[in-house]
Amino acid sequence: MNLPETETLRTMAEEALRACGARDEHPSADGTLIAGSPITGGVLCALTPSGPEQVADAIAEAHDAFARWRTVPAPQRGALVRRLGELLTEHKSDLATLVTLEAGKITSEALGEVQEMIDICEFAVGLSRQLYGRTMASERPGHRLMETWHPLGVVGVISAFNFPVAVWSWNTAVALVCGDTVVWKPSELTPLTAIACDALLRRAAEDVGAPTGVHRLVLGAGPVGEQLVDDPRVALVSATGSVRMGREVGPRVAQRFGRCLLELGGNNAVVVAPSADLDLAVRGIVFSAAGTAGQRCTSLRRLIVHSSIADAVVDRIAKAYGQLRVGNPLEDGVLVGPLIRGTAFEAMQAALDKARADGGIVACGGERVESGGGHYATPALVRMPDQTAVVREETFAPILYVLTYETLDEAIALHNDVPQGLSSAIFTMDQREAERFLAADGSDCGIANVNIGTSGAEIGGAFGGEKETGGGRESGSDAWKAYMRRATNTVNYSDQLPLAQGVRFG
Ligand code: NAD
Image (cartoon, rainbow, N blue to C red; front, side):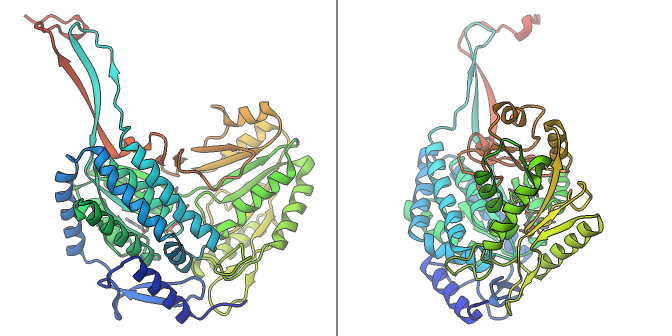
């Protein structure tokens, strides 16, 4: 495999950061927060993590800024997000470079992630004129009953390595137009991408005259996030990551009666019915399962295929997997980049060992691709006799387990019999089957698709999942409501004081 030198990657990172206007207060030669690249496994830069005092200051600044920001009319708040969208567009390729360097995404996917940021800014600008409340018919004469939506406060955004910028933008663009301010703790694995985004947002704030305290960046690992989790000034903690992290964060925020929005792991499945258009199905399956080296929360991990077509489907996927180029994500034609680090490769091997012990047969893949640097693996396709414990877990690597079914009821039961509930799909040309999959007794996931894979959502819909995935919804539709507080208002414009439900008092 032809990998660049880490020195070359370092130069690329420095140039991209400089182009985005990132000041150099973060990088430090002897810092303990190591920004690395999974491409070579080398170090890009050593940063200083935020100490407890800096985190407390960041929260205090965002809290102070909130007092002013919440009174700025929402369409004017939209002007800040519009400017951010312009700057993201201008720096699309710089940001995509940083995403590739830090998260290992192929260039096309990295550009797609930045495009997602631009899209959500556009959405949020429109939203800034549509933060609608309802007016309800009052039962009392001369009364008006309505609801209004008000800004909530400081939003603590904790994000995962695999979508280092899109998740931040879903939260931040919407939170800002809703009148909230943000303190962001990105993954400790992707700090440089975060520094670049923070610099662009700071510039956008200066350009439109918004208080710069509307956004603060804090860097570090779990303990830095914990400070956001425990601080009562943080009104909403929006945390994206593993179920393990959610189990720690959720109860702690609940203990102080804070609000929590959790976007956790998935264990996504596709059902392939006998009537499926197999050309379409195989393309959708391969992108969802092998894309991003299986490191998307929506990555396809389970294939539930009708027994009559199982051999044909497995053959076709194995053939497609054989064509996938695994390697340097900066190189044209490469479709599968590196795993984020060595522990991800080890977890992949451990899962494959468990699957084999459960009677699974590896149809193809799962091997290390020697690189002399990062950790690269061929996507694995594994036929399983049963949905055993390892299939019910999320292993954050490209493993696709294949199970078979006879009836649609059986397929749906298998599909739903996992602890997670993020994304799902069915490939079928039979409308009854498609509708059943989307119905109340069909897929139990937050995302359910027909004739399209499990990954690659658009920003217009609400994104999130059920069960151990955490129940949160972000991005489009009415997900904005999580970032605001609702007040119900009754206005009496009569000279009488009738009580509701006909109650008489005195
Ligand atoms: P992770 O759980 O290791 O880390 C996620 C973030 O949480 C990081 O910023 C980390 O520093 C922070 N964190 C960890 N422990 C914490 C604690 N106790 N308190 C506060 N913050 C803490 O996850 P990861 O490896 O970065 O990402 C992969 C996981 O994220 C997968 O499970 C994937 O499915 C999930 N994910 C979910 C979504 C979604 O929208 N549902 C999106 C992306 C990733």
